[in-house]
Structures are given as C-alpha cells and as structure tokens.
Image (tube, rainbow, N blue to C red; front, side, top):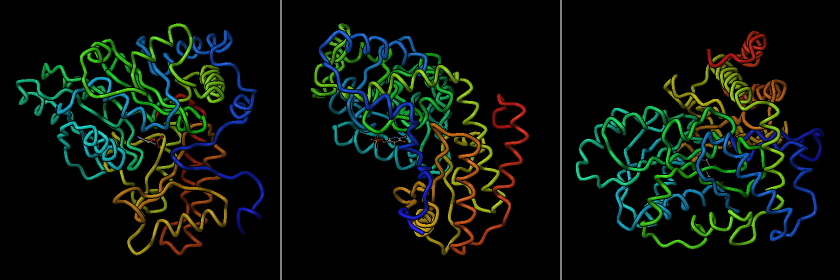
Length: 399
Ligand SMILES: *Cc1c(COP(=O)(O)O)cnc(C)c1O
C-alpha cells in the first residue's frame, strides 16, 4: 500500500503541525481583504481580545506572520541587551534550539544540563538565582511542553522559586506546543513573555506566532538594546491600537484564528484541556502495555499533548515511522536531535477525539508487529479500557 492506494484521510499524528479541522480550512479560504480597511481593523480588535482567555492574561498580545521560532527571537530582542545573562534548561531539542537563538543574538546563556527525560528543578532555579546577588541574570527561559521529549516543566513552581529568591529576572515560557491544549496561565503564573505558535494546539496551519507580554516585560522593552526591526513590539502595539499591522499580516491565517478561537470557546477551554489529559493518559497506558519505555521518566511531568516513545535497542524508529506511513498513511513524529532514530513521537493534540486516538494507536500496534519490533499485544485494548472508564467522567484528569 502507499499514500496513493490507502484511501481515506491521512493521519497527521505529529505533535505539530496538527490536523486542521474543516471549519478552519474553510475559514482560511475566504477572499483576502484589505488589511488597511475597516473590516480588517474590526477583526484585529476581536482577535486580540479573544486570544486573552487562551493565554489567561489581561496583558498585550502580538501576532506575527512567522513560525514559532520567530516568537522566540521577538521575545528576546524586545526585552534584553547585548551580553545580558540568561538562565535556560536543557530539557530537550527545543530548549537547545532556543538557547542557540539566544547565543546567536549575543546573550550569555547559563544552560543547565539535563538528560531530556526530566523537567527543570525549581529548587535549582532558586539556588542559582540566590547566588546571583547582583542580579546579572535578566531572563529565565523555560519550554513549557518540551515537544521533543514530552516533558512538561512546572512554570508555577519555577515562578515561586524566582519569587523566593527575590530575583527580578523576566520569566519567559515557550508554549508553542501547549497553548490551547495544556493548562497554561500567563498572569497567575507570573510569566512575562509567552511564546506561542499557530500549528499545534490552536489547530491552525503553520505561519502565525505570538508574544503575550506582561507589564514588566513591556517596561523592559523601553530600555532593551538588542537590535530589532521586524519584531519590534512598539511598532506592532502602536499599529494594533487602530486595528492594523506595521507590515502585511497573514490575513487568511487570521480568518482561521478567528474560527479556532470560536471553536475553543464552544468546546470550553477547560474541557479541551481535560480531553487532552484523557488522551495523554490513554496513550501512556497503551505504551506501557506494549512494554515500551516512555522518554519522560517523571510521572508529574507527563505531557498530555505528545508522547515520546523509546524504540527498543536494535530497532530504528525512522524505519518504523516509514513503514507506518507507507502501510497506514499515518505520519508520526521523529526523534529530534540526539534522539534521532531512537524515538518516535505520538501527537495527540489539537483537533482530536477518542476514535482518532484509537485509530492512531491501532496503526502503531500493527506497525510494531509488521516491523518485527518486540512488544506485547494489548496496547490498544488498554487505552480503550481507560477511555471507556474515563468517558463517564469527561472532566477526569490524569488519574
Ligand atoms: C514546534 C516547536 C517549536 C518550533 O516552532 P516552529 O513553528 O517550527 O518555528 C519551538 N518550541 C516548541 C516547544 C515547539 O513545540
């Protein structure tokens, strides 16, 4: 079989880009409008208000026509100065990439080593910041949901650690694969800059990114000296006041964003988060029943949007993914960076339901058999049993 002969819908089970619902695709197919006209201005004002409950912030939000990586750069060039010290944690591939962006911008990164299987330790954050008596560290950067390893960092605990150390550094969170899928609270958790993207929990095609900006971050932007032009918050916020952008926005993706936010409101964000929690737990039960190892080794840090799975030694994860694509027309996430070939990742976020998860897990279980990967049967059955039990309690979390 091949993509040409399987029929039916492609299963896009990456942890992003995710399956884009028909409603959103249709919304993006409207004719493009004048981005300096009155209809566009109304759309901008509505979007900027409607995004706030998703970030759980009352602060400013800016929308860039860029992939998520642009929002990393935007967050740093707007708030930091050449040579500033920043504290970041090696929780996986995306944390490593973000750190490399910081280095290329001329920041001095204290990169706390990690094994890609555990979250950052808040007690360690507190200790480092207490040592930094002259407050040379200007920013603590944390990937909320480390998509490469399916490890979630406890941002609320990291904020508390920063407060205990009475340290004024800004807290930045990469929520590119958690916004709109995992519990996230910018204001309550004291996050100064939220970094987001369109193509994961928000169910949009790739091409939009976000900065959620606290008052403290906005104040820092007044004196920050890293060069900035395209990403400049001041130009963006200035134009946004009248509903416009400093350059041509991604108009049709903004139509899609309007639809995505309507869908999240109709479902109820809390129900969406509970659904992701159920699907995360069901997936982990399948993986355990197969006898395979999760990359994440801390049960408190399991991700509800993606599950990274270790391939047994002697078996190549990319060969397995290729077989699953050819046989079942399903794309699974690859191992990234040093996990290349050793790990496959199951995306279970965005526009997703119980039967899509069941189909995804069936494809994996059949793929394991066809690829001759040693495993136990019954992963799908374990997941279905959990889903059936938890279906009676749709609010159930990861119990
Ligand atoms: C996907 C992702 C990125 C990169 O986003 P792009 O849109 O590919 O630039 C960064 N961080 C995290 C946590 C991600 O999941």
